[in-house]
Amino acid sequence: MTPVPKLASQALLVPFIMVVFIVIHTAGRVLHWLGNRDRTSGHQTTRSVDEHGGSSALDVKLASGFITTLLFMYQKIGTTTFVVLNCVPVDNVSVLFIDGTVTCFTHWQYVVLAYAAACVTPFCVVLLVAPSMLRRRQLSVATFFAACLCPLPFLVFWLARRLWRQASQSPPLPTGEARDRLDPGTLAVLGILQGPFNDNRYGLCWAGVLIGRRLVLILLYTFVNDVLVRLLAMLLFCFIVLLHHVDVQPYKHRVGNVAGTFSATALVTLGTVNLVRYGSSTGYDRRNVTTVHY
Image (cartoon, rainbow, N blue to C red; front, top):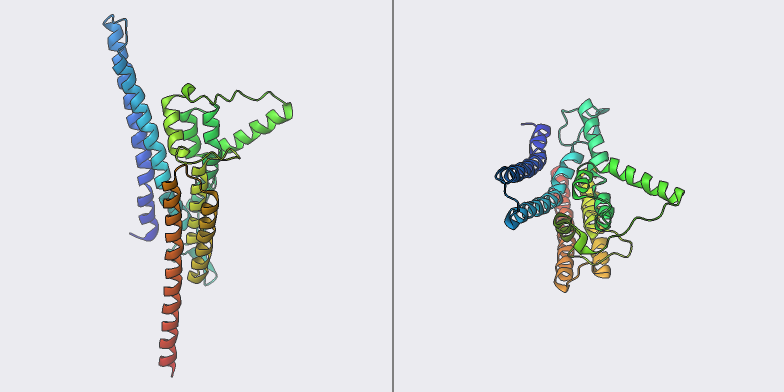
């Protein structure tokens, strides 16, 4: 396989997993409805607690698995998307960096570009602002998941709604901060996105900050073709992330902050080692070229 079809086949894993979640959720709803119909036809007047609890537990597990899958798969889908948009000029022709035989700016590349602009890039913004809306009961879990899959239209709608309310001086919506009013699926999603972190004074979710950092690293890794510049840029950004983490200490527990500091330090150390190895190999190659020249 050539590089582009290979990347496309690897990226198909993400929508496949999403479809699996949708099928499981739909099957659970159908079985739940069939169970209720059988009990109604049997003239049963009371519902069992186990049946209701089983449906609720399934929704909680699916919601938790869905958002966790999105977080873990973001790096894969982001890297795959941006790699096929990285073009370089060769003999006055723009071609893909990963496959010089593929000419850029064809019809399929515009589709990928639209997907990157509408779905991949704004995903971190949805994670920044949407959890607070979930907590205030301004969003349902289903709407939040739809916004995660296609963020740009929802972000535009939310911004327009906010501006319209400010212009019309509409009264603010009830906050509904009491956690006992939230459904189990919403609590599960909030527990994954914001549970391990301290509350942000701006009302933003720390999960969105972490995904935004990952997005910056993906962009540097994908579009900076010069090895030295890429190493320096990624090393500098990792160092800034380390300083920010040490200053903010975003996790609630000390163990989480220590682990985050260790992880950021490991990235800086790895980047430094790669930079030193690149400098050594470059110097070695230059000495070899000089020897051959003489």
